[in-house]
Length: 239
Ligand SMILES: *[C@@H]1O[C@H](CO)[C@@H](O)[C@H](O)[C@H]1NC(C)=O
Ligand SMILES: *[C@@H]1O[C@H](CO)[C@@H](O)[C@H](O)[C@H]1NC(C)=O
Image 1 (cartoon, rainbow, N blue to C red):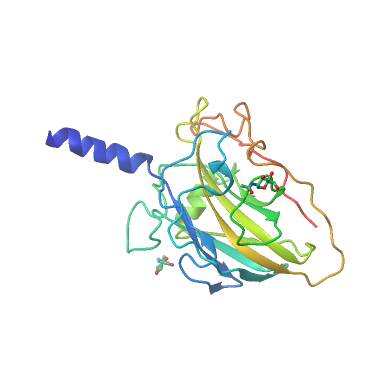
Image 2 (cartoon, rainbow, N blue to C red):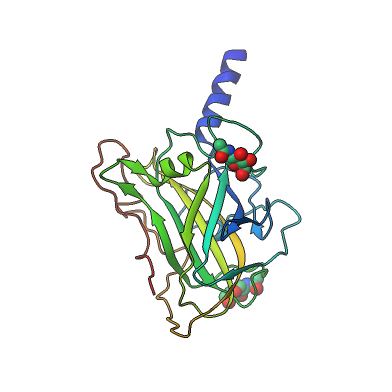
């Protein structure tokens, strides 16, 4: 009985993922769970047609009603840790088991209200991605691990004022040689973006679910012996 239980524990920890649960804006930490819809579980979503792929599900209660004020062009950091609890001390598998590999990607969608619960039918655009660096052979996940769970990027400077959801995602590819296999982990943060310039550009957008397909080379792939990797989803929007 005991050896089986230990084995199950090992399997459980190997398949568990990571949770995006805090935001920094221009280097200022906003606090754990503040302005973020934090999923209770770090178990992967693998069904590309699931509505849970939008902003995850089963949030830690009460869901934060904070809306984070972000100047367009600001440096934003999404912080991932192994579980919904955030950083709880040194852990060799925090923010992620370092043998797990894959890209880290950030998306935005304009919304009437950043605290609205309905996330169906939004129009998303990609603002940043860290896939695989063929020179260093580092994945986005390697950089996430090296940076203690922090994924940092710039909010485009040419966006319209207003409320947005920020969706930051890690895709685990270590079981992705066939579909379903790729493991999706994401949370959404609630932003109010204040524009500075007047050169406003409307990004092209995609739907979630819908932007990823079970045949995408970035969704069905090995992590071993790769010399390049195509991050799934649309091109990164630039102003
Ligand atoms: C990692 O992040 C946590 C939480 O933000 C922080 O308390 C800890 O000091 C960081 N560790 C390192 C080595 O930067
Ligand atoms: C959520 O928003 C979508 C798109 O606007 C709409 O079609 C749907 O009816 C809404 N769902 C709920 C429960 O309000």
